[in-house]
Image (cartoon, rainbow, N blue to C red; front, side, top):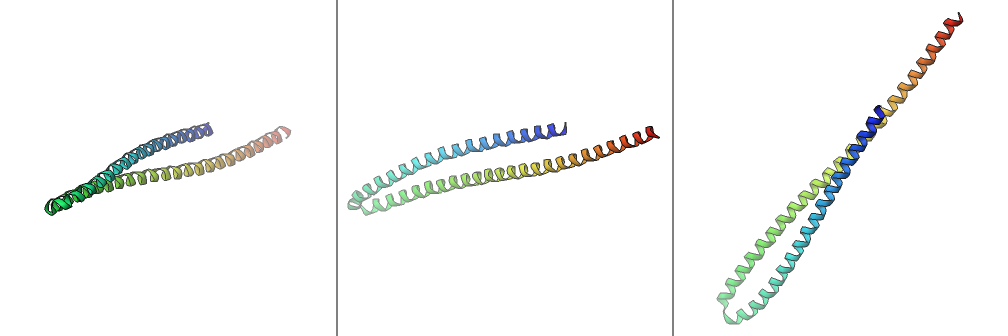
Length: 148
């Protein structure tokens, strides 16, 4: 009966871990989707930079004052977008680290559960051996009584 419970518990724990792994994989897929969106945004930023360079070339000849203002505006915009991207990436890194820790923790718990199960199996085997020995001793004593 205990072995069935242990097997059931191991099965439930395994199912729970598989569900968590599936959940982590789904979240990783979501992160990949977000990274693709970030890459698209970076492409947009690169295009904007190229367009800005072309405008700068024209405006340099027109006015140095407006050029200085345009450079300042573009710099601020790029710095903000890059800062936002760095913050977003930092949050994703932290989230991925947390998921990795959860996976490692789950593996440790499975290992502990396996060790516990093995120790329980050994204890039950020793108990069964002692019971068998006691039964044979009782049978021997009873047969000695009936013979006497």
